[in-house]
Every structure is written in structure tokens, then in C-alpha cells.
Image (cartoon, rainbow, N blue to C red):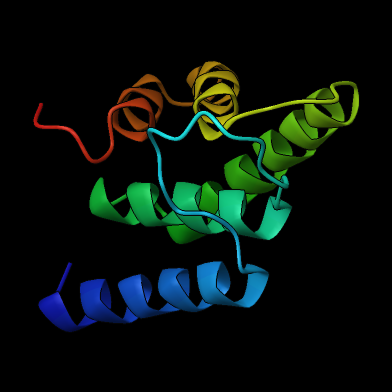
Length: 109
């Protein structure tokens, strides 16, 4: 993947986060508003890092976001760590490498 493509992907991700005005702190234990758009953008970003096909990554991201949205609607209090953990379990059904990278993003692996 060319450097310019990575920069464009990062900008799209940043815009999605800014539009939703959601906390970006991963270590925070405060209540967050679930954003399907933000989750899809995060999954697609990590899929691009792994050089996964964009079409397949979009399908996986949409399915996982739908499942996590259903999960989140059943709970009154969720944290970003909860969303990350549940999403990585759902992603693992489709792509174990992507699930590992998604779960450990922002950490040194």
C-alpha cells in the first residue's frame, strides 16, 4: 500500500471520528455512545494496514458493526474496551489476523 493511500485512509478515519464527536480515549472507563460509523472506519483502517481486499473488508466491517450494535443496544453501560473486545471476537469468525490487530491496535506487538 502506498504511503499516500495510508494518509488518505487516516484522514477519512479522523473525519468519521470528528463527525461523531465521540471520545477517542481507549483506556477510558467512562460510558460512551456507540457509533456504528466509527467502528466500521476503525475496522477498515486496520484491514487496510493488513492489505486486505477493500470489498471483503467492508463486508466484514458492516456485519461486525451490526452484531456489535445489537449487542450494545441490550446494555445500559458500555466502554470502549467492551466494544473492542466484543468486536474482536466477532471479527475472529471472519479473519483471525484482523481480529488480533484490531484488539491490540495502539499497542506494541
